[in-house]
Amino acid sequence: MNERTRITHPRTTAVRPGPARPPAREIDELTPLGELYLDSLLRSQRRTAFGVCAATIGLLLALAVAVAELAGWRTITMFGVQLPWVLVGCAIYPALWGIGYVAVRLLERNERAFAELMHQR
Amino acid sequence: MDAWSVAGVALVTVVTVAAGSLGLRRARTTGDFYVASRAVTPRWNAAAVSGEYLSAASFLGIAGLVLVYGFDMLWYPVGYTAGYLVLLALVAAPLRRSGAYTLPDFAQLRLGSTAVRRTASLLVVLIGWLYLVPQLEGASLTLTAQVGAPGWAGGLLVCAVVLTAVAAGGMRSITFAQAVQYWIKLTALLVPAAVLATVWRARGDRLPESSNDGWLHPLGSGLDHPLYATVSLIVAICLGTMGLPHVLVRFYTNPDGRDTRRTALIVIGLLSAFYQLPTLFGVFGHRYLPELASGSSADATVLLLPERMLPGLPGQVLGGLVTAGAFAAFLSTASGLTVSVAGVLTQDLLPAAHHRGERIRRFRASAVVAIGVPYLLSLSGLRISVAATVGLAFALAACTFCPLLVLGIWWRGLTDVGALAGLVTGGLLAGAAVLITLLLSPRGGWPGALLAQPAAWIVPLTFAVMVTGSLATRWRVPRDVGHVLLRLHAPESMTGDLPSLDRSAR
Image 1 (cartoon, rainbow over the protein chains, first blue to last red):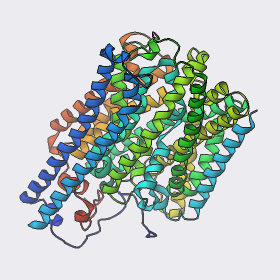
Image 2 (cartoon, chains in turn orange, cyan; image 1 turned 90 degrees about the horizontal axis):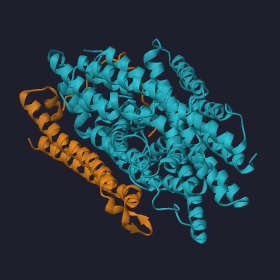
Image 3 (spheres, chains in turn orange, blue; image 1 turned 180 degrees about the vertical axis):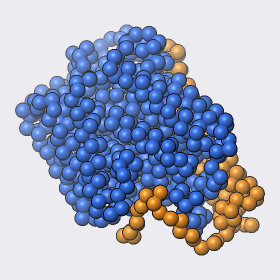
Image 4 (cartoon, helix red, strand yellow; image 1 turned 135 degrees about the vertical axis):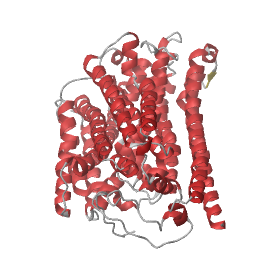
C-alpha cells in the first residue's frame, strides 16, 4: 500500500460529503428505525464485550483468592513445582488466550449478523 | 569492563538505528510519521506491539520482584497479559474505527469538547513520563552493572538512540524496529533460561532450599495487606493497559477494526510465551543471588544471574545476550512513548502549525522535550523498583482513561461535563497517590497499601463520578452520539461510504 494519506488536525479539516448509499446511510440519518438497529448492535456487542471482561477479571480474582486460601493446594506438585506456581506462572496463559479467541469469534459473529440484517431489508 | 555486554549493546543500537534509517527513506508524509499510514498487517503489528510493550519492567523488573517477594509477584505478568484481553474485548476495534490517532483525538471526537481534549492531553504526557522514567533508570542501572559506566550514561545513550531513530523516521521506522526487538528480547531470555535450567538440573540443586519459606507461598511477600495489594494490582494492570498512550497508537496502524482484534489476540500469545521466562530468572535468582533480596538492586537479577551460575566465558556470553535484550527493551518502549508524547505535545500543547515542514520540525523538537524531561527526573535518584513505578503508571491510566474509553464507547449518555469531572477526580487522586508513594514511600498499614495500589478504590470512584456527572447534565449529551457510535461499532464494510466524523464542522 503506497497510498498517500493526508493527515490534518480534526479541528482544521472540513466535512467531505460522501456518496449516499444504503443501508448504513439510513441508520446514520438516525430515523427511529435506524436508532433501533444501532441499539441492537450495541446491545449484542456490549453483552459479549463485558461478558468477556467479567470472565477474565473474575477468573483472575477467583484464582488469586483460591491460591491464597486453599493451603491444601500447596502440597500438590507437578514436575516438582507446587500447584499455585504452575497455575499462576504457566497454566493461566493458555486460558487467557482461549478467552481471547472466543471473544474475537463472538464479536465478529455479532458484526456479521448485523451486516446481514441490514442487507436483507 | 565486559566486552560481551558492550558488543550486545552496540549490536542492538546499530540494529535500531539501521531499522530507523530504513524507514526514513519511506517516511514521507505526516501520516507515515504518526501511524505508518495505517497499512501494517496483524502479525507485524502484533510483534511490534509486543516489542514496544515489553519494557524494562517486564525484562528486568519482574524477575527482581519475584526474587525479593516471591509468589505474589507472578500476578504482574499475568495482569500485563490479561490487560490485552480486556483491551481486545472493550476498546480495540471501536477505537480503531473512530479514526482518531490519540486518546485526546478520541475525547474530542466523542464529546466535542476542547476542555476534555486538553485534560486528556495532559494525562497522556504525565502517564508517558511516569512510564519513561523507569526505562531510563533501568538503562543506567544496566550499563553501571555490566560495564561499570557512570550512573547518567545508560539513560543518555537511550535518549540519543531514540531521538535519532524516532525523530528521523517516526512511526513507520519504529514499527519495523520494534517487531525485530520483540524477537531479540525473547531470544535474549530464552537462550540463557534454557542453559541455566540445564545447569541447574545437572547440579541437582533444590529450589528454594526450604519449603517453609514464606516466599514460596501466596500472600507470603511480607508486605502489608497482601490480598488487597494483589487484587488492586490485577485491577490496575487489566484496566490500565487500554489507557497507555504508546499502546493505543500502535493499534491505529492496523488497516481496520477486525485486524485490530486479531492483532490483540496474537499479542496475547506472544506475551504469554515471553512471560514464562522472567519468573524462572526470579526463582533462580532467589537461590543463587540471595544478597540482592535485601538491597535495592534486585532489578539487576536478570543481568547478574548468568555469570553467577556459570562463571567464565559461557556466563559472560550469556550476560552479554541479556544485556542486549535489556537494551532492546529500553529502546523499544522509550521510542514508542516518545512518539506518543511528542505527538500530543505537537498537536495539542503547541500552537497550530500549518506548513508541513514546520509540523515535522515541531514534532522533532517535541520529541526532545518528551524524553528529555523524564531523563532529568531519572537522575534525581528516587529509587523504587522499576516494575513498581511502571505499576503506578498503569494505575494512573486505569483511574482516568479506562472510564473515559469504556463509557465513551459503550454508553450513549456520557457528557463532556461528566467526563471532565471523572478525569479530574481520577487524575488528582491517582496522581496524589503516585506522588506520595514515590516521594514519601509510606510503609505500613492500610494508608500505605491503599496509596501504593490505588486502582481498586479510585477506578470505581471515577466511573461513579463520570456517570453521575453525565446524568446530572443530561441535556449536554452530544446530539450526534448516534453517528459516532455507529461508526465505532459497525464493520468498515458498512460504514466506509458514510461522511467522516468531523467536529469542527458542526
